[in-house]
Amino acid sequence: MESAKIAQNIECSNCHKQSDDCSKTFDCCCKNCFRDDNTSILQALSKGELDYLVEGKHQIHYKPGETIIKQNTSSTYVVCVREGLAKVYVEGVRGKSIIIRLISNQDFVTGGGLFNGNIQKFTISAITPVTVCLLDSSKLANLFSENNSFSVELLRHHTKQNNSLVTKLVNLTQKYMPGRVADTLLYLKNDIYKNNTFSVPLTRQDLSEMSNMTKESLVRILQQFKTSGLIKVSGNTFEIIDENGLRSISRNG
Amino acid sequence: MESAKIAQNIECSNCHKQSDDCSKTFDCCCKNCFRDDNTSILQALSKGELDYLVEGKHQIHYKPGETIIKQNTSSTYVVCVREGLAKVYVEGVRGKSIIIRLISNQDFVTGGGLFNGNIQKFTISAITPVTVCLLDSSKLANLFSENNSFSVELLRHHTKQNNSLVTKLVNLTQKYMPGRVADTLLYLKNDIYKNNTFSVPLTRQDLSEMSNMTKESLVRILQQFKTSGLIKVSGNTFEIIDENGLRSISRNG
DNA sequence: GGCTAATTGACATACATCAATCCCTTTATT
DNA sequence: AATAAAGGGATTGATGTATGTCAATTAGCC
Image 1 (cartoon, protein in one colour):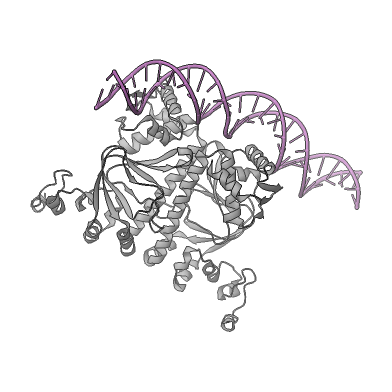
Image 2: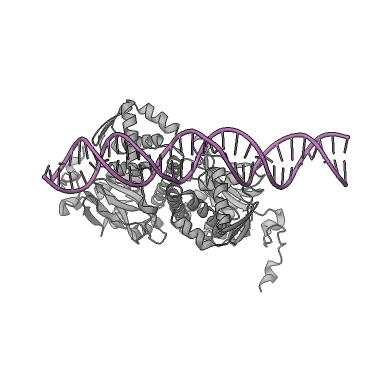
């Protein structure tokens, strides 16, 4: 153990990492926190670069329902979620919305404005109480120019987002409702909660906006899945009984 | 005019540019051709870098209907269209496809595999006879690392594609058929042909796959637009009579 | 006990499907 | 050269169905 050296720092009460930043400010949007996430594109940054990025960041708390980023407005911030759950969605025609994805700890949203006029293409709003870091996107742009492996990571991030949008396009336009609900349930199980049983802070309306249908239709499909023995539902608690069954429904549209 | 110096080169019979490349090989995927396009992301490259990229390129001809890139296969090529019209589409469930966009001269498709395992997320096939350059994507990756303004352009390109996918997602899932057909017609007029009257080499099936509906439905909507005086249609020749009318239909879904 | 969300039912409709006909171009035949 | 046959796309009509809309009821929850 090399903890001797690290232990000189006070452990942050919130994120439980050793950091001079945390120890001084008790502010958990600290450098260590960023580095902790193996999937973060910020991993490619050196300590100095991370210092530069984190300096002057804003750590903000939002209550459920509050808007973090508003679609079609200009914002020079890049959002990085520290705590809680938020939804990224597009406000479409006639008041209908599509939830693109859910974001939680360490998730990173560039919003479509990077190097492109800073106009946000999504609205992001808090579902649970949320803590986010708002990073200055011009700093990100500077790092993009200076650190090549970081820019590769950022491009990869965009490529993946691109591919997931294409998949969503196909799933939402070509599948019947059962297939779309199956996709939503599998997304929650495998990508968000990573557990067969999970309790979601989402309303039926939210779930329907993830599945591109009305809330009434969503409820009906959930009932069908319940009586077919594919899932158990009790309020906001879901249990996936037959994942292969759901997969099959998803495949056949 | 500085044509004296340039005139020492033979003019390429095909692309009508002066170029030693063209003059020797009569191969129109020449460096001059690339530089000619103001919107090309390749503009950010120096002459030497362009040489590096263009060296070893493959210029290939395709007949109508031929597949240039096949979805879900691995390919280390990046496609750059020199001549003709091709469609970029996703093959979805139950044999249905969605045409994402049409590509013609100078258009550039990275396909979703760049820095991401080289698996293509789209199928690209020729509509008219098509000439494309296939560039080695690893060379693109090298240039990405070396030339910062090029990497910025590439990221911007991805960001724009991202935003257009989001728009497509909303349009195709939330609008009624008339709104979707209006979008397709406005796309053809403003983005592809840049003219009120245009003759498309597309079948009704193609148009329907751009609008996410069956070909029968597409035909019916076109009839409605015709009798409403919004457009004139005769075979494959379209004339936009009332663009504002179409815009209004597009907005209201 | 009142508020919002969830559920259920009856009904309306946008859209797909299926089948028939039409139209136009290409190929074969006399 | 004129005509017929063939084939594929375009169009139109009749019908079925997936899904949305509207309204009423029930269930949770500060």
